[in-house]
Amino acid sequence: MIKKDLFAEPGLKQITVWGRGVYENKEARDVVVSLTEAAALEGKYVQAWENYVDLPDRIYVPVRAYGKISSNPIESKYVYENEAPDIVVLTEETLVKGVDILAGIKPNATLIINSKRAPEYLFKFIKSNTENLAKIVTIDANNLSTSVITLSGAEGATDASGIGKGIGAPLAAAIVKATGIVSFNNLLDIIVNKSAARKAYDQAIIANVHDLIKTYA
Amino acid sequence: MKTNVKRMSGCVATANAVKLANVDVICSYPIRPYTGIMSELARMVADGELDAEFVLGEGEHGQLSVVYGASAAGARAFTGSSGVGVTYAMEVYSPISGERLPLQMAIADRTLDPPGDFGSEHTDALCCRDQGWIQGWAASPQEALDMTLLYYRIGEDPRVLLPQYACQDGYFVSHILGEVDVPTQEQVNEFLPPYKNHHVLDTRDPQIIGAQMEPEMGPGTQYQRHLAVENTYKVFEEVHDEFGKIFGRQYDPWLEEYMTEDAEIVFFLQGAHAVTAKNVVKHLRNLGEKVGVVRLRTFRPFPTKQVRECLKRFKVVGVVDNSVNFGISCGSGVLLTEARAALYNNDEKVKTIGFVAGLGGSMITQNEFYQMFTILKNINKTGKVEKESYWVPFEL
Image 1 (cartoon, each protein chain N blue to C red):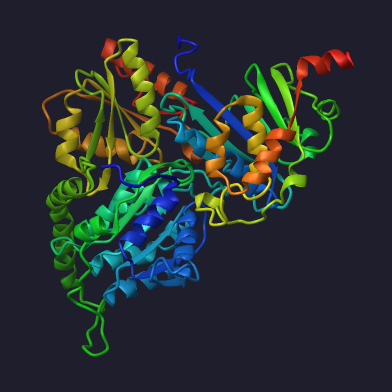
Image 2 (spheres, rainbow over the protein chains, first blue to last red):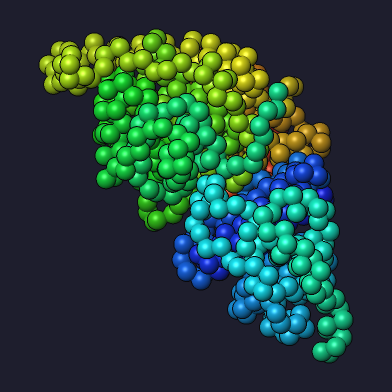
């Protein structure tokens, strides 16, 4: 019999970003690329990629971008999806409905949502896999920046439009505030829209899921 | 030696190599997953980073015909495709190698139909394996970049003059970002001199290329092409040595061995899945198992001698094929038949077991490699082979 944890990678953090096809696939990719590039500055092993099956050229279908950050060389390299995310990000708030955004999340996971609504309101729509969710973070990224709509950078090619110009920058900043996955200064070194990121770092609202459950119990 | 390390996909790494090779003519036609190479090159040409003629073919047959003509006219030419795009151009491959035109085609693998699946499988490129082209697989974006440069240099060597398929696993290598040390233009200029065609198609000096000929001229023409392929072995080794000196990355041209010292069992495979195999083997070594990985880097020309000398050192070899060869001997894949043919006339008794895995672009998981290892370990222990090949995961 195979040992259960034979292929475990304890130092590995997984980030999964959900977006909407065409309108946000660049922004979803920017969130992971800005975080993985910042982590690389810190000497971490990183990997960034987009879901190969989601077909991001179809307007408004859910699409995913993935990041891996690890203190050790990444072994689960050639995979299609993040099986157990530590951080889940929604570039658009309606993804809380009808999409199993929290599937497989690790204990103590964080969910970041681009929304002007309150975490407790959005939490009501999430129907499954909330057991391991520790924090919900909201940031009104659309108020701080404008989504860059481009297919530049699709299909593994270089994004000639620049990293972190649109809503990806404030979303990444909110992630850093809530999780400390990279240093905020290193994130600022990577992204273009530093002003939106600074504001997001101040404005992001972090709610403890345990408290939300108590409130609504 | 690390000069310019960036994270990029295999597609972008290949495009960077094409730019550094200062290619003259590019012909594209879109199909996933190789398309990223062409969109990157189109951007480079549009932004003035690369001075090349960028032609949109009307299909893959047209693509290969365009670079055929361009190479005959003396241009360094580049094209590429995936899946059914590769097979659609089938007619043109033999004429190109027959005319001894050293153009390059990147293949980012994609499953052939049915149905419309864009996952990786080596079947597309392996369908063309016997057309007189050089062929091998990169297992990382870095290797994809290096392979593009190496293959132009080998193919354009006057002792060789053959076209090349530079293959990479679709999605796994072509789309996932990996670290790439991008060489400088000076390094590439030192390694890869401009292409000189000695029989240039030129209206000022008319000649016929690819003319109709009589049946009795066939044997000699084919024998010349056979000798050209045979000549590549020596050139492969010389060029890889020189590459190592200039770029600081020394590849064995034929095989990459991982944890094979004192190994009794090895996996033998090519391409990206070898990366997963290596990680599994590392953990199995920690459990005290004598197991390793041998990754084939060059499929054509097939390194018969090197494969024989390498594999005969082990007791059981698990050959993992990532392609379909329906009805092939032993019911597995072409890598198994090639490995067995290479081992046939040796005195050692090496057991070779075939696995067909990762079809349709599915991952070959760590657990699947573990299960394959369990089968190989049992054969090593009992000396009995109950089944010559297994389709993964159904027959594990």
